[in-house]
Image 1: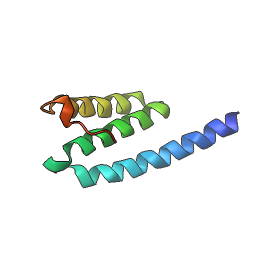
Image 2: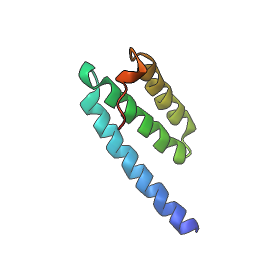
Image 3: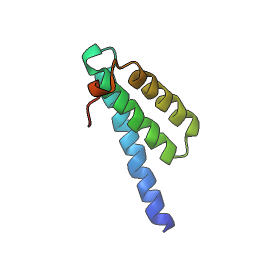
Length: 79
């Protein structure tokens, strides 16, 4: 079981690196504000699974701020 957990952590670590690269696509692009929020949320979740709670909280708070700035809930798209 420990070996499986280690493998999962490696996959999540690689995923978090990929997500960080994806963030660069969305930053400063007003038309992709929601996508940026979803990507920050995914990165925060990845950090949480890795036990990096400070980074997780930072990214999840940024995502929440973006989602709160959306004019109405109907503007949020399901991804």
